[in-house]
Length: 212
Image (cartoon, rainbow, N blue to C red; front, side, top):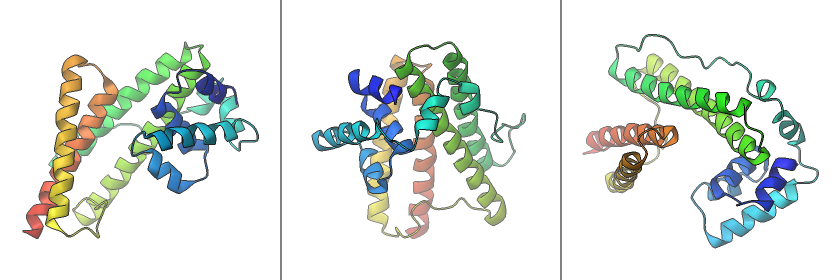
């Protein structure tokens, strides 16, 4: 697969490598480990797994379609309504979708004129990730409209101390995103991550409040 070879022979960007393996790899446990961030062991394992995928990968059709972004990234049902909802919770979900749509549209526009295979692969996989994220938000909205509450990502966690620890980590991530945005205010991916962290922080606050 040409775009994996480009990655392997290039800078071997970890995030891009993880995106590629998430789409084409079969080891679900490894996928979860890779998303936790780079370590010397995981970097070596990622290089090994992607090298194994270069030949005989089941994702060959996807690789070929990278040369046809319209076929790969054709229209889907994740369109955004023109007017934001009045409900505060739905407004937050709407804003997250709006940021994701803006990033996706920018990437799709840029992809059409990008010739470098590695860059095209990076953009294509990010667009596919965005579409999955938008679908997840639609599912959250459906759940909220049906049950008047958002689904809990970790319903088994009922220890306030564990939730407070997670809230502390998320708050640190929010501060980190703010620092990055000060340096690059127009960075769409950082904006999207910031929105997700803020939404999770608010959800954690509500969960902790209910348990105390």
